[in-house]
Length: 191
Image (cartoon, rainbow, N blue to C red):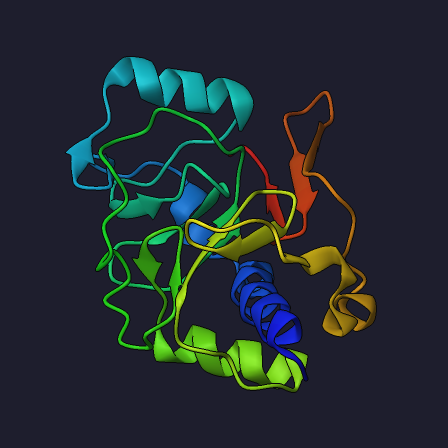
């Protein structure tokens, strides 16, 4: 596959890992722990604002959040889901947020070897170690460069039933929400 295909493949697989979301991240709050995002404890006001967007309690734990793509996961772990991008949560995203060693960076975060392997399997192409940017709609390219791929066009998206150009969140009257987008999906149910 060409160079643009390698970019597209690298981004798609990483982001589709979101379908293996970590339900514990939005589980019922248990105890007096703190919610830490990108190394900064969230204020009660920030937690309230998140609960208004996603009407479930956030489990006390340490998370990373990518404000460019909306991707998030447990600190030291791979992507677990996608939420709205551009939220003012915690500090800046750190390169070592996932403790990755793959040489592939997405919006500054080095992805894990497992994320890289998943990308390669899903897209049937090697993932080129490099630094990439990607938006929540799946458009991306090399850091500092123009857009060169659209994840919604990656061949693996068709078999996963994904694609599209934006994220959408639907909530019913009981507070059950489903967010879908190029990075995957997350379904939440209040307890």
